[in-house]
Image (cartoon, rainbow, N blue to C red):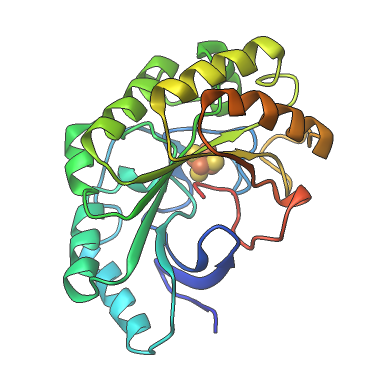
Length: 258
Ligand code: SF4
């Protein structure tokens, strides 16, 4: 059964998360980045300003409507058409779910831009899995791939990832989205290895374009190229997997903040 409500959608069958019930906390399309590969389209509200975009109480009501149907799920996943941590009610939703359904796992898919904020860190304390992104190995690549809101920097995102890692022992799967010609030169890959070693996620996941992104010039790397990149990334000492759907099993979720 799949259903679409105002904020809750799914459950969707996800290769990484099993049966995942999505929660989209933001109006289209509110994000702190405007990634060239985003499958949701261009960001229309490019911002780092957090807000109460949709009442947390209403999100919890929608979730209870879903749970009343007794449909089994593996995860509730914060994802969708923007950056979930921009919503100031995310902590209330997490606490509300865990209070009534302590066995339900919660995953946060995030672009990591706000993960260094101690307030955000406190709000998401109850999650079971975090899946942040790191799409550049330096400032130039970050700006070309992710086109951030004013004030968001590569250094800030790297520091946010390290800070979050230190503050919260939750499982972290760090995604690197490969945009051929921008962030896959030998020098880029070596810089990524150093960063991955420093951040030390539980897993590194390599992704690439599956469906049309915001910019039509974004290319899809070959399987061989992704395997080469995987081999280099394994130098960071963490498990590395290729999750690109063009070269792996289908996954029904769009690549917005997911
Ligand atoms: S891919 Fe995610 S972080 Fe990038 S613009 Fe889309 S929603 Fe925002």
